[in-house]
Amino acid sequence: MTDANSILSAMTISEKRLKHTLGVAEAAKELAKTHFPALDLKQVELAALMHDFTKEYPHEKQLELCAHYNLQLTEDEKNNPKLLHSKTGAMIASERFGLPSEACSAIYWHTTGKAEMSPFEIVIYLADYIEEFRDDAGCIKLREFYKKAITKELDKTTALHKTLVRSFDTTIKHLISQEQTICNFTVEARNYYINRLNEIKF
Ligand SMILES: [Fe+2]
Ligand SMILES: [Fe+2]
Image (tube, rainbow, N blue to C red):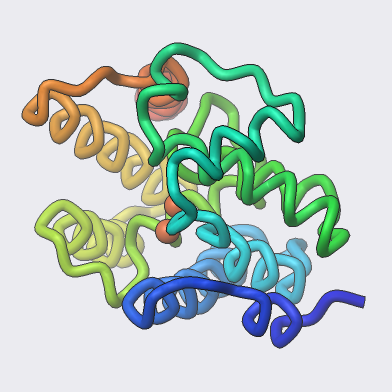
């Protein structure tokens, strides 16, 4: 039976990433309690602890793991090591630690997001962005935005969807400023959640 300690003791990540990982676990449990109380908090915690499990693996090792798990990669993914750790982390979470499929799916999608995310996928995706130790400008702004939205908005779903849209906007603007490609899943996610907000408005 997998518990937090068995994941933490198997990890080979820096102090900074460990702090971030523990921050994601706390933020994900808070998001689950606020928005999706039916989620199993123990499983949410384990998925959060696993989400960056392979993030510091060298690119070559990521590619080897992708081949081992027979993961089909797009050109963008082959060229961008950041996009691979979500996939390889999800595979290891399933095969080595026996996490349930909904937890593995949340790890798989935590970097790009996607349209119509499950509650589990949303809490891991967003916790990764707004956990308290992330100190880059985009994350700080999004964390503040969410805190305000959750107190200001009449319903929690609107606050959540507005925060998701803003997260995708932040990512897309950053990628453009860095002259990097934008993953189609992130664009689809942005459009999907804007449409959900417009549904409420009209
Ligand atoms: Fe990550
Ligand atoms: Fe992360």
